[in-house]
Length: 113
Image: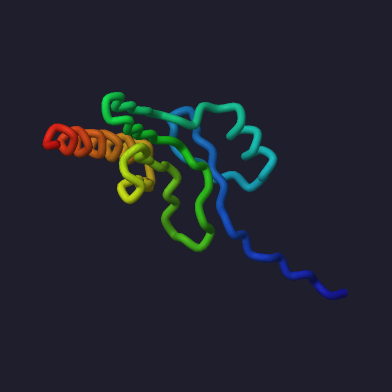
């Protein structure tokens, strides 16, 4: 009998534990349920006068080919299209620090206008 080769996984799936630390899971159904039942956004900053929004959320997925899982993403939206960016982080702490640095940088730019 020939053994079938298992295709390599293209992505790795994660959920957060009770302390918001990523934990890898291997069941797509479990991951999907967890993602739909939990709050994924950790911070949203709306700078109303400029229309800029900065959000930081948990992605829950990383590429299998990468050694380091960048599971949190901070996105800037509302500036000119060329300024809209996404920034990845490994941990929630890193992501929240990044969020704050980005907000402060945008505020400085807006004040300089």
